[in-house]
Length: 171
Image 1: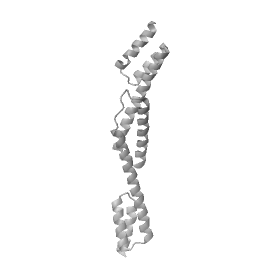
Image 2 (image 1 turned 60 degrees about the vertical axis):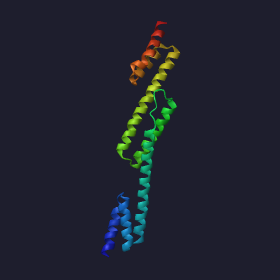
Image 3 (image 1 turned 45 degrees about the horizontal axis):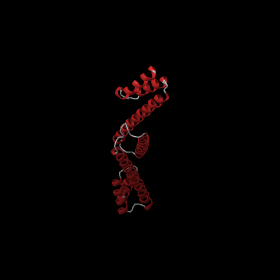
Image 4 (image 1 turned 90 degrees about the vertical axis):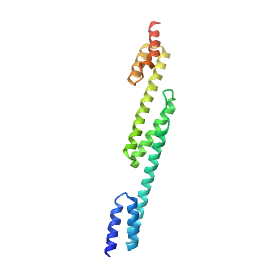
């Protein structure tokens, strides 16, 4: 009777935690000493829940790692490919947070996400410059150049656009 009470207590405690191996051992011991079926059944349901959580966490972690292995799009990458990578990474990070993936893994993905967002902003800024130059609107070109500079586009990358602006002003 004392062994059954101890096994039932251990089973109850193991159900409160997420250690699948400890819970398996507690279930096995509970069966050996004749703990009530409803308690064992409940523990087995909890074990299945824990195993499902572990599987989701592993899948979310694997998805993050898969996305982190993808090559970083260059500045010449299409806006769509950059946007797709952003979307997939945001979804994977959200899933990883929900599933309890370690923060160290998520941090790396967050850093890549920030870099991709920065790249996307730079792409949009360069596109805005091209559009403003096509419109021959001096003020729009100046505003687009300023925005591009704020987005981290280098002076070297902006040199041709500045020259085109000067040509517009001189014309």
